[in-house]
Length: 282
Ligand SMILES: [Zn+2]
Image 1: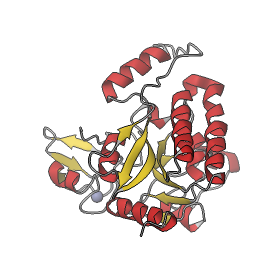
Image 2: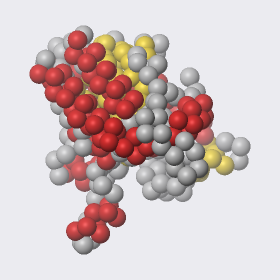
Image 3: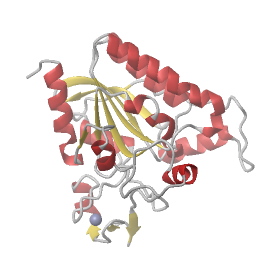
Image 4: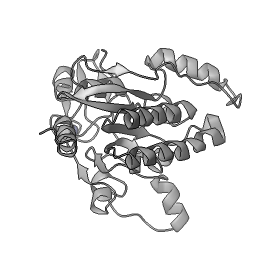
């Protein structure tokens, strides 16, 4: 499986600057230069300051699922172009096709069944590189089906979110996914399921406003951006200066929206511990 790290140098959240034929990585937080091999060995976290870079869904899967245990589900659902959306340069359907080829992903979420230290789990992992992790009909449908599968088979559910919000190319259809995924999670919980939501940088918009915030336990990676609207929009609306660290994982945790902030290297262990307590596997 290919390692995928994001080049998101346009974003404030975390950068990967790839210099000198991919040998070096520069940390955007502390400017430290490190060997790419050291950086990858450290799971995409700066070895000097612990800055968590964004990572793709496939890389995340490698870090969380037991080797060889992942069986992809619902991977054949792909976007159509119901609104025939044209952005002035190209049609949405062409853009989707191009992105699928470029990113080697079918959509902004990968769903399936895997094992975490031997415990079977239903998992969904979003990928910010695919249309900014935006939720269109396919993301909504895949997440919903994963939740329904977990309900039917009485599996613990883990969803990793990374999203810029709704997929504007799909208009209202995109917004409807918020209700659909939330309803599925409600049924899952009523059937006795245990859902862990893991927020990664960034989790915003319609994903925050639906399944990402519905976890029985909500975990976040350090300093991840978590919010609904962006800080500039909020500042302009309420005409107030926002406090330092607003919408970062630690701030959001201190204000009660996130339960724990967990370092990437500890994530798999924490997931295992939580699931084994609830499912009496210890
Ligand atoms: Zn650093």
